[in-house]
Every structure is written in C-alpha cells, then in structure tokens.
Length: 500
Ligand code: BGP
Image (tube, rainbow, N blue to C red; front, side):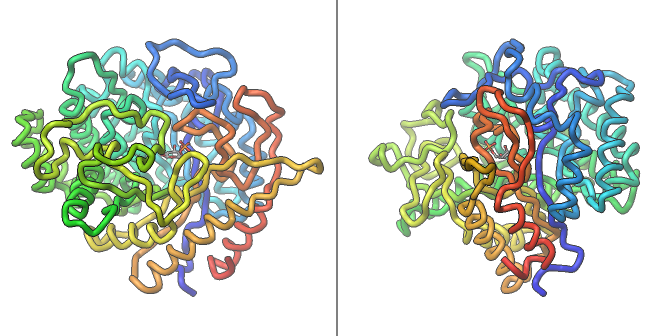
C-alpha cells in the first residue's frame, strides 16, 4: 500500500464560501461580504463597504450554516475522514478588535465539530481564509498595521483553547503568498485587507503586511504548541510551479526568480527566517520595513510543523514577455490585467518585473474553461520541490477542477472530466510518495461540495462531488445531489487510493 494507513482523505472549503448566515449569531462583516459580487466575467474588487444586495454570493452561499447536519451526513457517506474548513474570524470577534469573543459564534463551531467527530470526520482548520473582519480594514488599514498581530493572536488563542480536544491540524493563513500579486486588487485585499490609495508603494506595503502576518503566524505556532503539544500547525501556500518556457538560460533564470517571488513566504514559515535573496531585494529597493529584533526571534520560534498547500495548475514564463505575441499570454484570473511593473529596466531578472504579465501559455498542457492549466505531473514536481527544500511533512489541502456541470433530465450529473483530473493528480501524488519518499499527511480536494468561487464569485465554477442547486444569480432550491464523481471518490477513499 502506497499511502500511510492513517492518510487523511477529505474535502476542503472555506467558511465564507459555503456558510452563508452572514449576519447570523452575532457575526460581523468580513472583507468577503463587501467585495463586488463578481460572476459573468466581472472582476472581484474592493468596495467601500457597500453591502451588495440579497443575492450577493457569499451572504447566503450554500446555507451550510443552517444545513450542516445534513451535509456532514453526506460527507460521512462519501467516506471522508477529515474536513478542512475555516473558522470565520467575524463569528468569534465580529469587529476583530474586541477583548471578549462572541459565544454564539464559538458555539456554532463546537456544534459543527461535534457533528463531524460523531461521524468519524476530523476537522482540519484554517484560521484565516480570505475573511478577516472588515472593521480591521477601515479602522486599522488591514495588515499594514502592527496591531493586527495582537488581534490575530488573540483570536487564535481563543479558538485553539476552545477546540483543543477537537482539532489537531491547524493552518494559519490561507494562500499567504497570493499577496505577491500586489498588482491585482483581489489578492492583497482578501489576504490582508490592504486597500491601496493612489501613489502608494503597493509593493512595499505588501511586504510590510506579509511580515506582520508571518510574525503573527509564528507566534500562533508557538502559542498553539503550549495550548496542546499534540497540535500540528502548518502554513498554507498557493503552489503554482513556474517552468521556464524554453531552455534558454534567460528563461530558466526568469523562472527561478519568479518562483522565489511567489514562494519566499514558505522559506520564512518553514525555516524561521528570511532567505538571503529577499533581504537583498529589500536592501536594493530601499524598503525600510518595520522588522524588529523581537520579530526575528519570534519567527525563529514559530517554524511550522508541516506545509499545507493548494495545487491547481502550473505556469510557464518567458523572459521579457512584453515582446511576446499577446495571443500566447496566459490569462488565468479575471483581474490579471497588465497594471504595474518596471517595464523599462530589463536587465537581470529581479522581482521588479517578473510578474503575471510574463506568464505564457504552456503548449504541452490543456487549460480549463477559466484558463487554469491542467498539469498532474506538476503536483509531483511541487511535492518534490517542497520536500527537497524543507524536509517537512506535506499536506495537499486543495486540488480540483472548476467546471460547469450539467444536470440531466433525470437529475443525474455526469462529470467524467472531474474524475479524470483528480485521478491523474492522485496518481502523481502517489508517485511522489512511492518513488520520491515524500512524507504526505493527506489530500483534501477543494470545494468537494459545490460552493461560491473565491476568484470569480460564481456558482457556475463547480468543484464538488455534491451538487448544490443554485445559479450565478442566486436562484435555486439549494438542494444537494450526488454527481457521478461521488461514488468514484468514495471508492478511492475506501481503498486508500489503491483503486482509482
Ligand atoms: C484557492 C482558494 C480557495 C478557492 C480555490 C478555487 O485560491 O484558497 O478559496 O476558491 O482557490 O478558486 P476559485 O474559487 O477562484 O475557482
């Protein structure tokens, strides 16, 4: 048998993408509640706190808040032994800066976790998944403010203490490295509540915010181990390996720098200190960041226990891509417009100009309807990349294929494309364990019950084994039904990945 006996097979979601009940039980307004709704090609952007109408995607989402008991039964029928979700910060601290938590919010997660455990499902928890209190943005400027560290640590302390006997696996910040795309509005806002004003140095502010988040994460790791020494506390990294588009040395170098630019966050999380290349970069750019001696000590004390990561796609990069035919460029997010970047100085590749605009289509792989390139082997490559650098246990906490499903007359949903995608990725993951000896904790495919897309706000972009009757406009009964892939994944779990 390739995978370990206690392998965690599960599914992953985030509170704001499925719970709904956005004002229920004393919940406060989160950043996810005030984005533009997205869908139908509309870019998800920051509003000034405008609360979109009744049919705003996240406000009701799939109403998991009220339906979780039935849903957990379905998860148990699917056979998963773990369930990755997040604790909505705003259910516990509605504004984020209160001293005392909201008991009703705490009770909700007690009930949810009890329901899971009763059904043989272990909760795996992300502390911050694109849903920080909006109040922390308006009053403090989001994570550009050092005070956020104390608020986050307090939040973590409360929930880790409360659920210390119900949750073992924790993650601090979901896809913390997405902020490297500071040229978009979506990524920094959802991760760190950063709203930029005209003329600000976005890049410098992003690095400052990321530093505070990394310190907060390290302090939570240290604190969590005091609360319960058995806790396993990880980071969560968006892994999209970047290949050189050709073997031209300049492309090779561009790919290496692009990987550093997106993935340096992992170095800090896993090694407890900044890598030399990023310190050099700060120096060269004259970024006088607020990094204290105490911060450095805290980072060293808060190395993560494991590396959690999402894997959906790989990229390819070409040096000096502005000379490339526009039709070859990759567009994988609605907001990946060319915006910033130092277009003039095209000397040695540095973080300055290696950006999304340099990404090109990879001719050797297919892409989804949303331009996400399908590359199962890239998962084995990624597992090896992490394993070689950090030698820590790894946990694939998101993987999946967003597709528009069709419901047949008789209510059945045939989704062979989903099975094909997941099967190929599980095969690659098994190869990494079998041939490369990677220490792998588990696998939780994303959105295993249909939910609202974070990137586009759509319901149409579905990942689930469980279908939810709701469309992009918010219409539908919210009824749940099983897709063909449900039986397939059940069998995969039952055989611990032997039968695909
Ligand atoms: C990751 C996020 C998830 C999820 C997933 C799929 O980046 O951690 O929250 O949404 O991507 O993305 P999308 O919903 O845009 O298809």
